[in-house]
Image 1 (cartoon, rainbow, N blue to C red):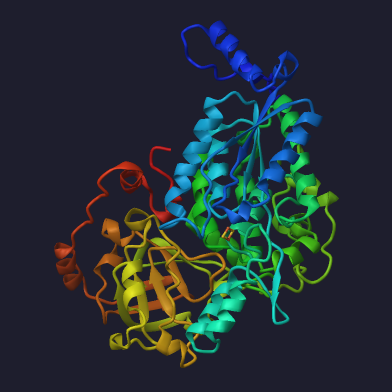
Image 2 (image 1 turned 180 degrees about the vertical axis):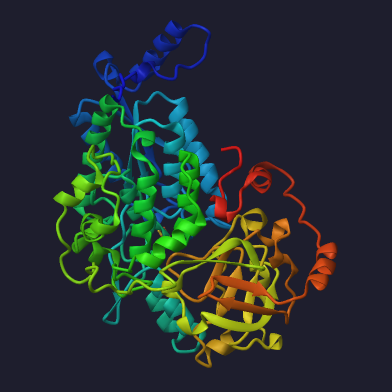
Amino acid sequence: MVKTRKPEGITKNLTSYGDNEFSLYIRRAFLASAGFDSVDLSRPIVGIVDTSSDYNTCHRQMPEMVAAVKRGVLQAGGLPLAFPTISLHEILTSPTTMLFRNLAAMDTEEMIRAQPMDAVVLLSGCDKTVPAQIMAAVSADIPAVSVVAGPMLTGFWRGERLGACTDCRRFWASYRAGELTKAEIDEIEGSLCFTGGTCMVMGTASTMACLVEALGLMLPGGAAIPHAAGRRLIHAAAAGRRAVEMIREGLTPSRILSKASFSNALVVLAALAGSTNAVIHLLAVARRAGIDLSLAEFDETARRVPVLVDVKPAGSGYLEDFFHAGGMPALLKVLSPLLDHGAATIAGKTIGRLIDEAPQPFGPTIRPLSDPLREVQDPGALAVIRGTLAPGGAVLKAAAASPGLFSHRGPAVVFESPADAVARIDDPALGITADHVMVLRNAGPVAAGMPEAGSLQIPRYLAARGVKDMVRVSDGRMSGTAYGTVVLHVSPEAAVGGPLALVSDGDIIELDVGKRRIDLLVDDKELAARRDRWKAPAPPARGYRRLFFEHVLQAEEGCDFDFL
Ligand code: FES
């Protein structure tokens, strides 16, 4: 029997003055200055995490969403109080938003814990904002509803439909290969991000939105509604109403999340051919929830689940096509035989019930199991690779890679850092050929906050000769909108002395995706000598970056802080 929770409203989390009655009295006094009286203050409180920011174009219409959530909360008899937290925009944050995901999670969790609120509605969207809020909500464990900004609508350039950011990368690669002029790339720049909202391909933002819905922490259908649509505001208002109901039901994340929820999320991730970044984020959320989840389960699930969603970068469509095809409810319907129907959701119904109520897909963007976009095969959409170069594991997005490179042996060309790659990659003196394996190290969590630098550009002179893909290996990440045969998240990373730190130019690296191996073919004696010469990097002098350096976990553990 689940205990229901009594709203505590304004009496919750009293400021510590050594006299609780005084704390409450003075709290009411200050709230009166904002126009709240005893009628308002007798209601349960729903906090609304507002991550709108002039620096976050993906959340451009979030103020309207906040207003819609407030409307829903009021309709249901609650008192809505919005508050800001750190907002992370993927493109306007240096060196990478991943460095700040845990900071955003801490900010959100601590503000939920510190302020009076009985439930929280989490407004996020751009890449790291979604996992940061879910990590926070799981740790704070009060009733929580996730609402994402939703994807941008697509734009057009000279009659061609396009969107951020798979097309950004495709056109940029063409420009680097000399196939587009400066004037043309400037024109394209003006068409890639047609509206506010998150990237409208199956990048990290869209993948995470879908996974949060699959985990049961979002109302049905919320993941794919376009940012600009009125339906987005209707969904936000419904979330506000639902948050009030959840207070009385005591429906916290710990009552929603289970091994079944994560198993379902892994099935959805494979069917979406979603972002590799989701691997890290799901591991982090599961760790917070105290649920065992291993890298191996991602590989095992991907081997038995076909890719069903025809959206870039693995397919050809965009998120608005996925939305019009029925979005996540329709995808879950198709995936029904592969899902655990008993998993709970914030809707107050099991996933099985939601599947019963969901429509079949409309149109071809969500394929049936009998006619998938990519058959069940080995490797699946995502492969977990290990070997002497990655004893702790690494990840390859096989669905966006070149099968012709799945078995490849070539000499290494090593870049010491993302900055080194920028400085030297186009230098013809390096003599890089299409057979080389490009290695980027010191892009891992400890070294650099794990930027999305792993998908190194094809050297300009090779691109001009028509080379579209090469094997690349990195302890960094790559954008969910990117593609290529890129072995990512290599663990342990170079900065903690992983084997990647020991690679020299010309060493032979062998990738065998069939065997899930990546090996450095250098004898042990030579590697031992190199290890003796290796020096660990010095920690940053102070502040958050020092904290991050000292406490961030490796990729296979989700890159959370060890003390969280
Ligand atoms: Fe915000 Fe892509 S930059 S979702």
